[in-house]
Image (tube, rainbow over all chains, first blue to last red; front, side, top):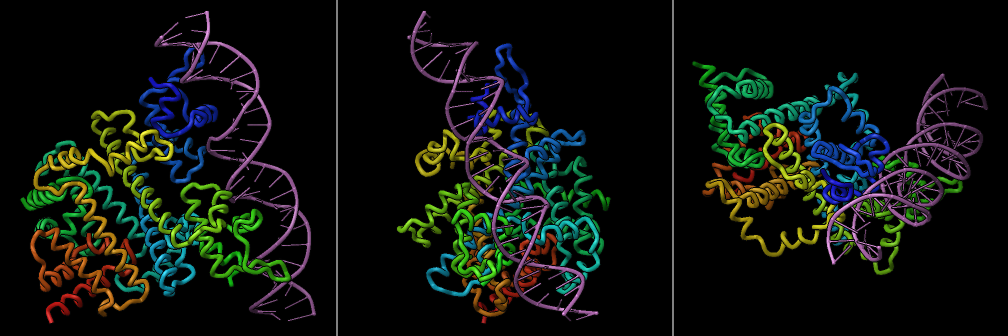
Amino acid sequence: MHTVKQVAQMAGVSVRTLHHYDAIGLLSPAHVGTNGYRYYGRDELLRLQQILIHRELGIPLAEIGAILDDPGFDRLDALVHQRARIAQQADRYAEMLRTIDRTIAELKGDRGMKDEDLYSGIVDPRKQAEYEDWLAKRYGPGVARQIEESKARAGALPEAEMAAAMDELKAVEQGLAQAMKDGTAPEGGANDALLERHRAWVSRMWDRPCPAEAYAGLADMYLAHPDFVARYEAIAEGFAEYLAKAMKAYAGRLDG
Amino acid sequence: MHTVKQVAQMAGVSVRTLHHYDAIGLLSPAHVGTNGYRYYGRDELLRLQQILIHRELGIPLAEIGAILDDPGFDRLDALVHQRARIAQQADRYAEMLRTIDRTIAELKGDRGMKDEDLYSGIVDPRKQAEYEDWLAKRYGPGVARQIEESKARAGALPEAEMAAAMDELKAVEQGLAQAMKDGTAPEGGANDALLERHRAWVSRMWDRPCPAEAYAGLADMYLAHPDFVARYEAIAEGFAEYLAKAMKAYAGRLDG
DNA sequence: GATAGTCCCTCACGCCACGTAAGGGTCAAG
DNA sequence: CTTGACCCTTACGTGGCGTGAGGGACTATC
């Protein structure tokens, strides 16, 4: 059990903020003493973490409450989701850095930089005019026109489909990485559901079936090339090898 | 000269915001027509960029105005400064990601995570008491222990090195993606510096030299495998093909 | 040259997420 | 039993806009 000040210091918010969150029913203490003191436990700390992550993403408090109190709310699922959004923000910052660099270069050298380029990465994607378009594209109508547009550039997938595909890939990888961390053996059948999703994903991206041997070959290819290794090692230490082993074992079972 | 709406769309702010900035004297139009219309020029766009960067860092508008209007203010100098702060923020996001990952792991596995660890990266460093400690840790002593920890897992790269490698890869990719957006031809020699960095990176990861043919082969491999295509298309539409072309052309020049 | 559609303007009130006192209990250490 | 750091509630203030309302201005088309 922690007092307001303890929680405030840990979480980097003010005491007033905790009072406020209590007042609006967003975060109530686990316990209130007869003296009126607020005491917070582990669960409240976790909830506060969620609140702060959401807040960081610019979501209004009322909405955060609605999300967290939704009966269908799954903490794990939400975290995975928020992780992706945070990663997006991180990317935005990376682009801001590049924009600043280019602006610096221009101030020094006077090379041409288009006006709108001044803001790449600084623009909050939520506020960009295309955002609603994007949402509509992703969930609603207007798909027809969109497909036409994206076919202009041959071979490329529509953005929405690509985003969905990346999400799926990420989810599968996270699942497998977790399995590794949990000590699940790569060769066992415990990961088969995830591996099947992975294989299906590959097949979708190839736009043709991915039989067992091809899948096993892919595993070898992963290990042989640094970009893959780097990418998977970034997810978790030792993950590249784990993934390759799991894929080959699964392929073997498919063939068997 | 741009109207309010044009500027608003470029910069990702609302028209109301521009009105507001005008009202408080933070950003005045270059010109106001007899009809009262506001018109903004290049200088104002640059100033707005500065404003938004500062705002992103949580600096109040009044203070931003004071900073920008300070007679000793040097745009270049300020940009360099802000760059550093943005980079710091980016680091914070990276740590948030790690915190989230650890929380995910804990929710699944119930392994111990100290209460205060729930907030590492989420805490705004300005508010955290340990901020100075953190700086000391980062640049000062205590480095030895860190290195020891990361070498615990043999064979794998130390985390720090991996992070640096990923940064380098990202930088190169971003640079090439930008070149593509700028209309630079993939086969021309304009990207050679970046491509050499890329080849050197591959070689470092392989831990053996990467001759021209191997590099060209890698390009083919990129195109042949969905994970790569997906990853590069996520960076920018058409980038997978662009990168492959550039790599092969560069390999050709190396050989020739 | 009328009509419609899209832009632009100036008030002016409202709102969210707290900040900031004011006034007063509580608790652990010395 | 006092001191000082903590806790409480109540209440008003503030920053950075959002969101109309009401009304001109410009462009295109019929």
